[in-house]
Image (cartoon, rainbow, N blue to C red):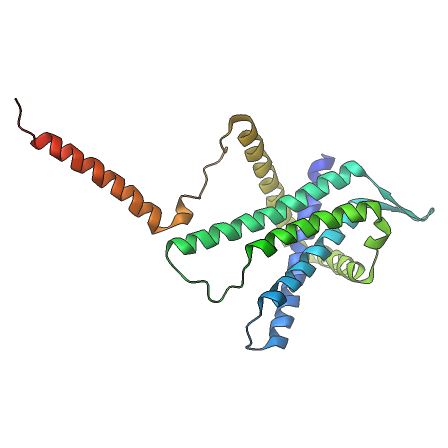
Length: 231
């Protein structure tokens, strides 16, 4: 039960954090005006978003002994929290890849979206490195930016309506994490995903056209065989 409660509260934390960051991005867009963001600007903001989220997640996974005063790092709790964080970010990465493949199947140009696969992978590596560094130097997790986010997230969780919405999101986050874990375990054991993959739908008309051509070839051979004269 403690594990379920831990994952649930982590999902609530992610939901509240994304809610706050949504307004931060609105402010950035308002300051930028009609000017489109560059690749560097986009990934600087995204890197800051991921690094702060990692910092907050790390603080959520440790205890602070005020009588010492020192940080008490629970390796098991931190391992679970780090795994869930990386699973969450990797899921966002995979959804973005599937969306690009889906639009690419319809030959739609991504003129309005700034995207770089190497930089996306670099962000995941940065998150992993930050978790490792904070494990050895937990004192750096205590900073003004992280404290500001923690205070606002706590206020949102205590709000009547928003708090309820975040708890609902946390519940579905808990279910989603377990479905991903079950799917991963089944792939390792049997080599096949437990749930049907949507990758075929993300390929667009190209995959459908290929399937139709295969059936057309098959039918053509069958017709030729039927029209051959019998001896």
